[in-house]
Structures are given as C-alpha cells and as structure tokens.
Image (cartoon, rainbow, N blue to C red; front, side, top):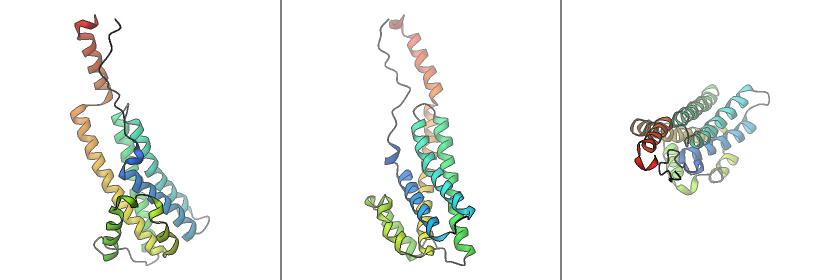
Amino acid sequence: MGEQVKENFIKPRGDYRTLLSYQKAEIAYDITFRFCERFLKRGDRTIDQMVQSARSGKQNIAEGSKAAATSKETEIKLTNVARASLEELLIDYEDFLRTRDLKKWDKNSTEALALRKYAADKSHNSYEAYRNFVETRPPETIANIAICLIHQANFLLDQQLKTLQHEFITQGGVREQMTKARLNYRNNPKNR
C-alpha cells in the first residue's frame, strides 16, 4: 500500500487560446459583432443568428479543448459543433453579399491572396490587426475579409478533427485508458 501510481490517463491540455483555429474564430466573432452593428438593421433576426454562430464557433473550440482532459469523444463532438457553427456563419456572409448584388472574392483573387498573406503573419492573430479594415472599409470588403478568415478557421478545424480522430484510433478514449491504468495497477505484484 502507499505505492505511488505512475499511470496518468488524464492528460494535461494546452491553452485553447494558443490554437490558431481559436484565434481565427475569435477574430471572426469580433468582426461579425461589429459588422452586424454597422450594416444590419435593428430587429433583423440575422443579427442574432450571425453573432450566435460566430460565438458558438469560438466557444465550442474552447469548451472542446478543456473537455479533452477527460473525454476525447466530447472534444471531437464540440470541435465539430464549432466547425458547423462557422459554416453557418460563412453562409450568412455569402447570403449578405449575394442578396445585395455585392461581389464575393474568388479564392485566388488579388484581394483574397493579399488577405491570406496578411493573415498568415503570426502577429495578425487578433482583432486589433483587422480593426482599421473593419472600421474604414465598406460592407462588401468586410464581409469578404470575414469569409476568408472563416475559411481559414474551418480548414484548421478540419485538420484538428483529423488529428483527434487519429489520436482516438491510436490511443483510445479516456475510459479505455482508465481501464488500462486500473488493470496495470491491479496486475502489478508490487501493489498487492
């Protein structure tokens, strides 16, 4: 008795704020909040829908990351909810442009390529890097900036989901790891 248990099935998790997907989703939320205030009419249900989709994308990345310590299944589920929420937000921005006969940037347009290059700079991973654009550009430009950032966040979430799936397949979930740790402890003669 008194033997120190060396198995640790509850893995420490990193800070979700360091996840690039979270950073992009947070920028998309901040842009969306301001976009809706400036360019949509009070009482428009779309405001609530867009802000809630943006919030859900950001919040579910955070919640999934924190839940990962005790549930790989919950982490996968919440990461996928974040992905779905951001997809809904993407469609809202595309609808905004289409219904107003505004131009959506082609992914290989000069503007989109310039924004992707700008966004790739690690010092541009907060809203402050985009504030001047959002406060001075017309709604068409701001919507396209948001679309580009949402696509980036979605790509990163797709990669996270692939990694999470691989980790689950190769390492199992927490319940499996708990059972393995318990059996290892019980089967070790030193612990009898």
